[in-house]
Image (cartoon, rainbow, N blue to C red; front, side, top):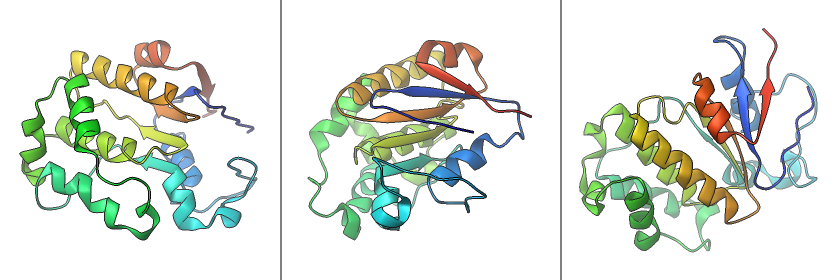
Amino acid sequence: MDLALAGGDRLGLVAPSGSGKTLLLRTLALLDPQQAGTIRLLGRSPAAWGLPRWRAMVQYLAQGPVATGGTVEANLRGPWRFRERRGQGGWSPERITGWLAALGRDPSFLDYDAERLSGGELQLLALLRGLQFDPTVLLLDEPTASLDGATTAAVEALLIAWLSAGPRACVLISHDGEQIGRFATCTLELPR
């Protein structure tokens, strides 16, 4: 398989369950071993970037996101302490509350107990946590599966705006063909 992404691309990954969509995303994020082939970002291999930098630039948002103890805000602030994140601007409450408004959520969402969030709320937390670092490639594994239609539309609009603000691309897995049609600028169908 040959796959190339350019800034602004929104690739919809289409395939039946069990065909390797999640494995492909996890491999691109270097969370699973690469079976064969070559992966490059901006012309450089993962080894040339180094693992921490690669994972900062290529972010994978899992289908079943998790949160640590504490508030939503604590979960958003926590990763800024990682060495790879230092010097990248840091926590921006204005940016996060702007995104929350775009998602139809009040700033009080930041005070919610992260371990008591619903599945859909966890998906929103994971999305915000990933977007705040402005990765070059965002790998989304069914990021709206637990959300209602209005919130799904808001997530899609937020992602499109975020992608247009820089040289970024994303890959989206969804079992919703209508979502792929609305959101993706191109599609890739994996064989069975």
